[in-house]
Amino acid sequence: MSSFDTLGLRAELIRSLQDIGFTTPTPVQAQAIPMLLGSENDVVALAQTGTGKTAAFGLPLLEFLDPQERAVQALVLAPTRELCVQIAGDLERFAGHMKGTRVTAVYGGASIRDQMREIQRGTQIIVATPGRLLDLIGRKAVDLSNLDVVVLDEADEMLNMGFQEDLTEILSTTPSDKRTWLFSATMGREVRAIAKGYMRDFQELQVGERNTTASAIQHQYSVVHARDRYAALKRFVDADPDLFAIVFCRTKHETQELATALIKDGYNADAIHGDLSQAQRDHVMGRYRARSLQLLIATDVAARGIDVSDITHVVHFDLPGEAESYTHRSGRTARAGRSGISLSLIGVREVNKVRQLERMLKTHFTYVRVPGGGDIGKAQVVAYLHKLKNVEVDHEALATILPIAHEELKDFSKEELIERFMSVAFNRIITQFRNTPDLNIDMSRKDHTLRGPADRGQDSGRERFSTGRQMFINLGTADGFDKGKMLGYICGMSSITGEHIGRMLIKDVYSFIDIDPEYYEQVFSSFQGASYKSRKVRVDEAQGPGGQGAPKKDRGFKGGGRPQNRGHRKGERPANSGSRGEERRGRPEPKKEYYEPKRIVPKKERR
Image (cartoon, rainbow, N blue to C red):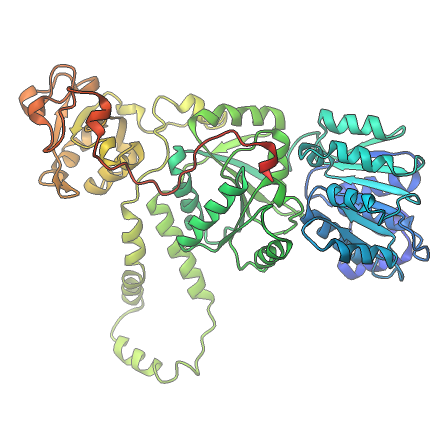
């Protein structure tokens, strides 16, 4: 295994790396550093996000630097403020033993006059976003005529953000004999066009497979209704107390809306997006790095440059439009040799999109179910027990109470004490999640399309009795029920599990549910005398699709399964008279925990 000592770097850089704790170069560093040091040609380097690209170009850049010369000798272009700050900070650490080396970060959202003063004092390296650098060039506040090296970091994202014209204008002001190093996680047509248009006889370095994601990332997806995505997100957070995640949304508005909803519901969350000032962004990132926040809600652009090594999950609240964006998002986890999970919350129509990502990224996406109430309750109990096991007892603070406790509990055995403690401590948690509905979309007759290749042999448990006994219930969408809520309601009333319930047909004011014949009587009996929101719940047995074949006098149905006039609820029009709009008029819409309308998002708003 090689070390940085063998790569040809100056002694000052080796000492700085030792101070930082860098001993063994990553694959991209081991391959890129010798190439950049030993060649006068331009270089295009492709490597996955989180593999150490900053050191791969930063160390050779510093090797060529002359700290005694006060002119700008190197320029690093990056798409976002956060990435600028990160790169500038890393370069300053690498140059810790190179006296006289100055690095200036130039980006929007900060005082341009302060940045101009920093450059005028003499700086050898500028790390900049394209827009702010153009502003400085226009003010003649920066001279790039002595540049030796230009680095284009995250070049694909700069092009996706519409910086192509800016890059063209900036590069036109630089010397023709400079070296250009382009680093990217993906190699699209636009990136190759930049390489061919602005680079001389470039060499291409590729670490790992092109346009793929890191192998340490587990790619997962869950299928839920759009209106249930927010509830599903909370379920995953509740079921994993150690979760530390970035949640991606498409737009700034959606990002802020989701963060506000999570904060209101008691979660440690905050948003980062382009509408925040630099001070606000720094404050949010400071809290996130300190783990005061569990969830960082971000847009694609704002999340560039977030380099936090212990992120456990990346959650795609909205799937991105391009595979390259998915790669960059997922790369926020599984950094520095760690593993991570990339979880997508999708609807039925997006399943094909997941399949396309599988083919394009040459990876497998695993279908996972949204945790149920039992899963969440158990996870929280186990987390509490681990905390209890590892707590440091403050004997001094408990000195007056412990003797009383020993006296009161002396007659109980260890087993009895554990049982009573569990009952007192966890009854609330277990009760809270006992009747939570299943948010997963009904998988019956859809397993072939909703499950990944490795999962298709598994039995969903529902098709076994899809032609079993069918129950009619006088509740439907007008009462706020969808399949997930109906499943949870029936399971909660009858104490059976979802695997004993098959297909469901949810109509406006009534529904049909297939029940495992072995459990039908148990379910039927549990609804005798039941009420829902102060209204009597009526159930009966139906036979065949739509309930045809059940006795009309018992069901209140005519042949096609539609309610008769005499069976309608008080104050409502019969379901077979008037229009659907009239039928629903005056009824409250089902309550939605979180909802955002789907719309086409202008590219400029995605920041």
